[in-house]
Length: 220
Image (tube, rainbow, N blue to C red; front, side, top):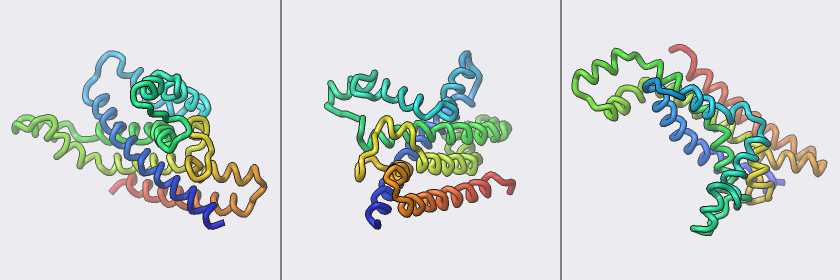
């Protein structure tokens, strides 16, 4: 029983941490680029960035297979050039979780970045600061709480990811079987004790993250 709990738990934490790191960096960059100034097609790009939030997990998983599968747009090139296969691997699970959790960071980061007072930024430009310096020293610190809240939501989402991960990485015990997949397997096997234990672990972690996120988003 201990191994059936700790192995998927550690694997889930590994996937969630890596996926959240990817989603955090890409989400903040995308939010900054889209929020910096208006340009033709911005609304369409914003919709595309938000799409993983509303698409059914199976549809998102299918898109990932088309893109990173062995015969996919990127997957075929990786397999042919470097011999790298992402399907049914831990890396595939991380990519699936990162894509699913990306909108959590993106939407929170964009709202936080757009909430930074423009007069602060304009004053810094008048003082001779470059855009990169302004971002690091003014924009990012002022938007940090919102970005951190989105990152924590992304971590919780990555921990609970199921559908896309199942399609891309499979359900291989000890290799790609995360907590949500382990719950599914336990229920299928009729092991209610294991399923209940895993469900409680996931629920407690997610509730704690939601409470902390709520405090971060609440007015000071």
